[in-house]
Length: 126
Ligand SMILES: [Zn+2]
Image 1 (cartoon, helix red, strand yellow):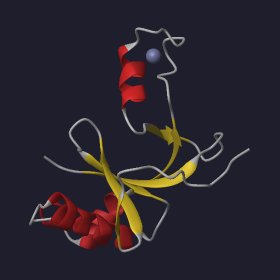
Image 2: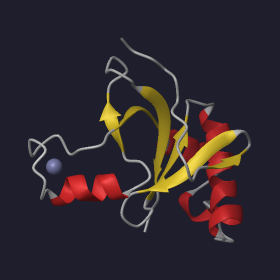
Image 3: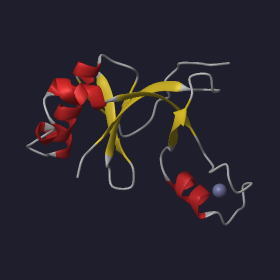
Image 4: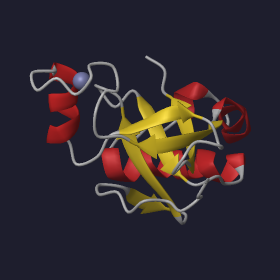
């Protein structure tokens, strides 16, 4: 059964009513919970960079908000607690990383997957 209930994940910061967190090893992508109008999401991501990350340029280098909106991907995500590849081996490094984090998500699933919830992802340049 698919549920669109968005889990209560820690560490997200809200801008323009959209909850945002950096994701990836170096925060190279931004993830927003829920599906929103792409232009509004572009503005929210820009505010997140300026006000939360403290990057005075925001998304300016990546183009206009309308251009950035076209690069924002509507995806579906699930929270995961093990890597799914190792058969839950106790010494799996990937599983250890996941258990050490507050949350871990896989945002490459489909809407039909159990527990899938909507997210938007923007890959930052540079
Ligand atoms: Zn594992």
